[in-house]
Image (cartoon, rainbow, N blue to C red):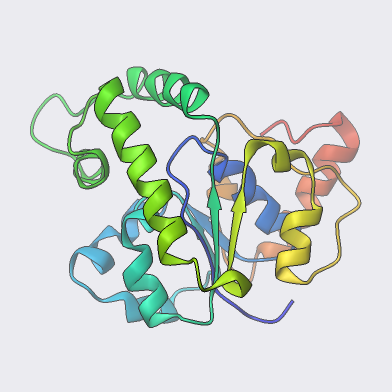
Length: 214
């Protein structure tokens, strides 16, 4: 695979962790939930991504800035993970219920939630509106950029073909990852120097357990 930026525009709990691990299995240095990069976007310094040792990015804050990212990286590949809205609402509600907002003040995570959903706590009606608006906005934006845009729904999560065809790479000999827990420890940010070791470790985990068991 040629060196190329890949951005996942899907909102949290749409399969972003699974796609991130898939990137590692394809040998792509990747960062998942790169909240530390928020300042880059808040200050409109997207060019600083060029200085970082990653090629693939997923989860917040990436979905919030897809137009700005595309303007700066027009040749990048853009993937939007999506899922059935009802199952997504259940998943995001469960996720938020175990990760309440900061007790004192506003944390960096809270700022990202506000930037994305306009609030720090789950609200079914608002979250559904944001989800639908985001999905339609991304589709409309990339309507004339089919070569650089792929939508991955939950059915495709069990199949390497769509993503490998899109990226023009060979399919791995292991199953496509299906990761439900976003806390993947050392695998959440794997740079260019470490990606091949991480890939080997993930394959070994799968061969031993029949799952990625992260």
